[in-house]
Image (cartoon, rainbow over all chains, first blue to last red):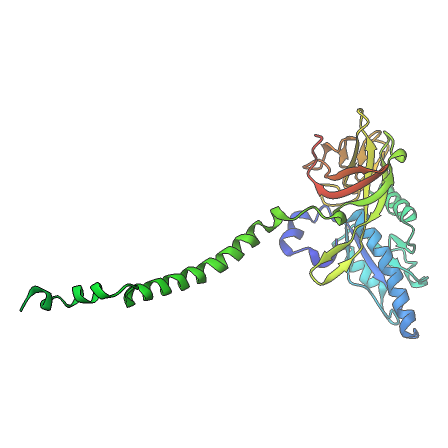
Length: 127
Length: 178
């Protein structure tokens, strides 16, 4: 589910079911030409669409992070972990900054089978 | 004076063949009023019964898979359905679990879990042999879509039409098998 679909009342009732937060990382750094920025975001959107369709009742997709230069991703993930058991990153670009201990997994594919394997193994091993 | 002189109305009626002014006015006003009420009423009635009169559009059913490829084991099939939402048109992808029942009749179930909307899978986990399982919160459904655990309702069903050796799927409806 997208973050905007959860009202205060719904969150209070259903918070226990939504234990996984997905943070999209666009990988934009400012050097992209317009069509390159479009492609990065389009690829990321494909991944998010698959995640939303497969796991709508357990994941919450948060607003995307762009332009990570100077951003303390570790701090952001730490804060998200106050509300979620699992924090995952979703991206279409290779972002070394995401290889943090705090992030439980990084989804970097549009292959549905690989996404299913990655997410469901994570839930089975760490739940 | 005679009685006739004191009865001007009687005199006027005697000579006149058409209607009186009062009658003309009554008919005109009444007719106009009836017209002004009747025409909108007619259009509103037509609007109200329009859904009943609409024939099922061919576009409501989508060709999905050859009938010969459907077996007793549920399999998932992807298809696109043209959606018009106001001014916005799109062709979103949909999935369906299609199988034959014990009588050889083809049926199709929606893969959307009735708990919180995740996508279920056939034989989705080790505890769900010959069942649909939801990876989110452990809901299980039978082959006919009956909710066994967690979910409050059975899986929805697609309308199915077999034509020229192909399986066509139509709108989603409540499960009619359980």
